[in-house]
Image (tube, rainbow, N blue to C red):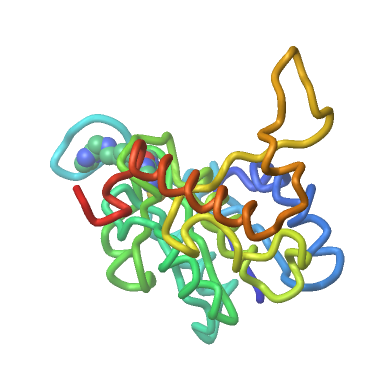
Length: 224
Ligand code: 21W
């Protein structure tokens, strides 16, 4: 997979070069390219924003640097072009899996009060939100989406941490985890986990999943 990011703050995406995602890029499992929208501004002062027509607070990103950068990076429109927007479709694990099937993704990050609507109408395929809270721009949202999507690229996760055995794959929240030491601050690891009886362990974990899901996310069980 190829992932293109258009942003005014490309340094923010350095955090995707470490850990599991960094390793995956070293292995060539996907590539992440960032482009600074400002580099495409034809303005003599490299301006990328202006006041909104109709008035109101803040600034709006102007169409020229966005249109030129989008179409320079993706001339033949091979990317699914995603604009991160508070009014976009909310990201879900289901949508993550759909995006992971794409060959080429482009994330366009807005700042200030957003981008000129004509860019959305002309150049963008879909608008994506990561939830109902307010950020200062699209970058953090793009990083969340990229992180979630890359976990579904073949080879990114080892067999150990594969996507098939996790919360949301059986529709329940996770069971509690314990590791060494067996006693910490006087607190014991539940005895069943030391028993070696894998049937009992699986039953205990499933019951814990049901218990915590009923408590914290009854909506996941269908009983709202
Ligand atoms: C937040 C920009 C609010 C504009 C009309 C005109 C991308 C985001 C963002 C931001 C406003 C995402 C207004 C969850 C998010 C993002 C910056 C609107 C008032 N109305 N997912 N002006 N939350 N946020 N400002 O904030 O760019 S995806």
